[in-house]
Every structure is written in C-alpha cells, then in structure tokens.
Length: 329
Ligand code: GGG
Image 1: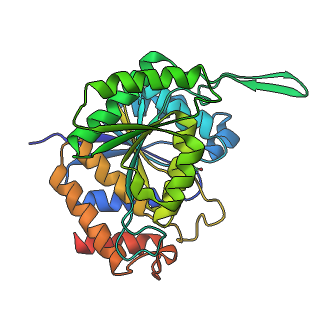
Image 2: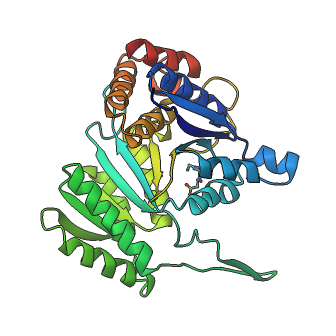
C-alpha cells in the first residue's frame, strides 16, 4: 500500500479559503493518495491570536511533504515571506501562459519567470531611523544569485526552453546588480545550448507589454520578479490564471500569484484556476505527472468551454468551476 503524502494546507486570508477548497476537491478527484492537514495563518490570526503565522502552522509546514497556500493579506511579510524563509524555498517559479478561450492581450504568451525568493529588498532589513526617514537594504549575495541562475538555466534545459533573460537595473544598482549579473554570466557559460541575454527591468517591462514573445525564461531578483509576474499575469488575462511554486532543497510550497482580494471574498466569485494549477504543480513535484497533466487539460477544457467564473466570461461560482473541472478529468 502506498503511503499518502502529507500536505499542509494553509488557506490564509480573503479568497484563500475558497480557491483552496476548490483545489482540494480537484486534488481529491485526481485519485492520488494525499493526506491534508489544515492550518491557520493570516490577518485573522494576527487579530485573534496576536500572531499571523502560529508556531503550529510553521511546524506543520516543515513536517509536510508539500504545502498548499491560499492567499496572503496585509500580513504577507509575516506569513508568506516567513514561510518561504523557514522552508528554504529559494526559487519561485511563476509561469504566465495564456489559455485558449480567455480574452487577453497575448493569446500565445508563454513565459516562465524565475524569481529569487529570499533576498533583495524583501530580506526584511528595514529601519525607521527617525520620524521622517526610513531605509531598506537591498541584500544580494553570490550564493543566492548563483543558485537562482542555476535554477533558471536548469528549468530551461529540462523544459526545452531556448533563452534565459537576466533582468536587472545595473545602471543604478551598480553594486548589487553587478554581482547578480556576474553570477548569471558565469552560470550561462555552462549552458551553451540555452541563449542568454540581459535586460534592464524598465525596458523589459515596456517590451513585455508590447511584445512578450521576445521572452522565454526570465530570471530576476525578488522585487523585480514580484512586479513582473503581476505584469505578465495582465498579458494573459489576469492574476486568477497564475500559479507559483516555491521550491527549495527540502521543501516546496505552492501558492497562487494573486492576493487575498478582500473585495470579492466570501461571494463565490473568485477564480480558482491559479489554485487548481498549484494543485497540478504540487502533484508534478511529488512525481504524479500523469495526474497533473490530467488536471491541467481538464482545467484548460473547462476554461475554453466557458465553464468558468465571470472574470473568464463564464457564469459559474468558484466551487461550480471546480466541479466542472472534475467532470472533465
Ligand atoms: N499582487 C498579488 C498579491 O497581492 N500577492 C500577495 C503578495 O503580495 N505576496 C508577497 C509576495 O509574493 O512576495
């Protein structure tokens, strides 16, 4: 008998609980043996217990074989950034791939953003020096930069991608991005079969909007990766379609790129696609490739048939969309 893989489920804030429930129903229908354990985290925990990320949640995440996360609210730094740090998930894979049947700017867009997940301005080195002055330190290290460059080139090699673009702002961030680029260039030499180029973040942002086909795999530092992945979501029809995988050497956490969307929370309006795709990524991570593909194909077919939430041109509620996906599996 195969042992069920332990999955820590952290729905988080706002629409997190709805999209996560949709994903769990799809995962259960996949037939893969999984044992779900629910944990609290988020703004509501901070209000009720004085802690956005309870110790029990952190311990559960560390013990699980994978974590399924829903959405972070105002306490994102205490919840998702801390989880990423504690789990050592240094890579954040953020695909932006258009779906057939979704009205969007670029129906053939297919980009993978490989975001460094541990440092940059998200390292939490901030100070309020006086009432009128605050600072934040942009931390860039050789170790983390080499590691993320390696992850990007390995992703490209393993997935038949042709090009890696390192995105930076070295003309202004002369020390930190010089180090980041030095590492990318060194790693690129070991992957002669993958083309390598560099782009300033501002010009890449403009070009992404005008012609995303110019990009294949993007590797970048934490803040630029966060911003560009929301921009890329805009190219393919919105944040509801973008999952992400936070990967480290020992742990993995899957979360939609979107936030908690408090304005639509609790109404069954949230698009569960990103969370369902997170479920597929989680299955692939655990080695269940066929079941992952089955979910992805069923989701794509449901979206194409407009068996989907209103933001995708359908008339279904969140859980009804999950059922439509299950029916097609
Ligand atoms: N822009 C979507 C959103 O609000 N995501 C939640 C968030 O800010 N997460 C922090 C992060 O990804 O670093």
